[in-house]
Image 1: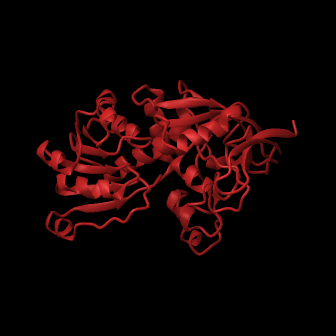
Image 2 (image 1 turned 180 degrees about the vertical axis):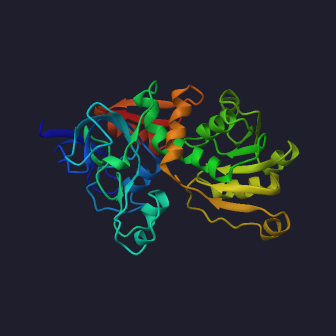
Image 3 (image 1 turned 90 degrees about the vertical axis):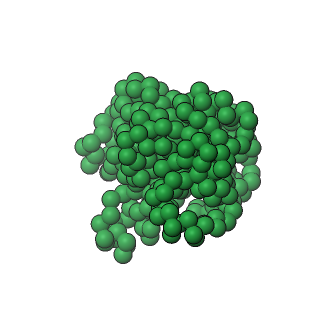
Length: 338
């Protein structure tokens, strides 16, 4: 097959249109993956509307792609035809720039700092297509028992929240508060609960409060004052699109507490200097942090300990999927099947 269907965005704020494109060629270190599903991330929305810009239009986005290997390059030894794999955002770094000369492992941070990284759906064409060629070492094997529809959002959203928990490394039985119940937050509640923590969801949205309890939250509060009254939190997980929400939630942070940042927002974040100093707070940035955390995140889903909430759209409805995701109508992840 020489042609495939791909979702193409002609310019900022344009619709996502299914078009015929050439099937990508496979380099010596690449695998060709027949995509079966790809989730829409908030980053995709921001790139589609021009808020973020890394690559000139037209764009083929998508860094939550999963499928099976249908061809391998001549130098590939770690993957074989038939493998079920995922292609996360950070595939590889250039290896020759000043940053890469420091020999950092491939991660989101190294991808951001490399002069010429291969970032799926960001610097190169992504997985909203029937086929994608990817660096073999930049793929992850999917565990048995996980569906493509559940694996797709785990490639970024699940990866993000689990890597953040692993980075702050709460003590056994710690109190973890998840600020925001959305694409990231609904997974953060489940991962924190599955890892054995006491979980409080922080949301002002009424219909999300009961949902948070069904997802495993031990407690649900509306703001930082209520969080403090409920016993406070050792860790705040920022999964919201509002920095104001996490600053408010810090009113319920216990002494020596940690705030782990993973949500992306555009409003300013004025931190309370007094409590930072007098209470010994830590504010920690976290991205994907390493492929080993993605493997762990996928395993939780494969075992049934975590279940992404998805709405599935066929590739013919990719434009509808984008509109639903960008308007916030999806609960909580839109997944497009190919």
